[in-house]
Image (cartoon, rainbow, N blue to C red):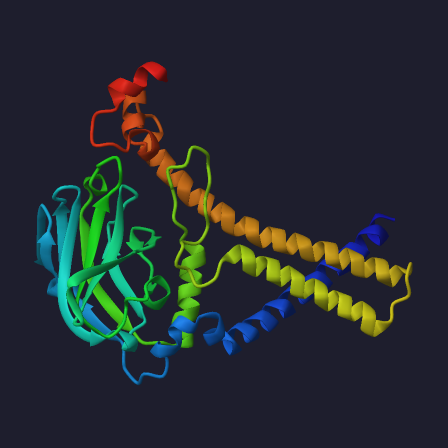
Length: 322
């Protein structure tokens, strides 16, 4: 009896998985065909016959840093100056040739944020910047057209900057190593890499008063929540089409089976969203443990950007109220 009861649900999960996979294939093909309609900012960057350019980190020069030096082909930063450190690179290239930039960095902690800066030949006195998204102790590839309409024309200088967070810990005293930078031309592989980087490396510890993980960063190509919803909608539409094409009579066992498959499809969508979210929460949990676990209350306050993000000693003011 139990086997007979569970068999329709096993079949429903299999059917829902097939619908989910087919929906993913349909959406992937639609995205590939309509890419420049979805992301018109990339049109000027496609079709350029150039190769990836790799520049070693020792080509960078310190602009603002407490202590920075070249070693083993990298630029090493041992100390910040005034809450930050910047190293710059003189490099002339056409922005439209390289929509993707990947900085190879080791040693970045949650105590600091990173950003990429550039100057254009048309405006040599103006510096533009774009925040970099964290990936472990480094940063992800960044899609420059998505982040800034000012990434155009001839670029005459690139720089990477590290800024201490509001608690002023200067990367927690850890050494930073800028190992190099890659200027990457447009390709479908780079787009896929950007999508994976956006979804698997979320911004963590946003200093909210409750545990909120906002998901992909503001300059991501696509938001995962929207894609999961589209997968469920397309999958459900496919199941509905199956009901119509097969002319399933109302109230029959076959119709109930399709309803089970629809429910399982929704569970698959929910599961995908939760898998991503829990990966983000685990990353945030590691940061929380580093800042607060086993530390005295006064030190916990100092380590909290929300409570102590000020250029003064806030512990004496806050402790009586905690």
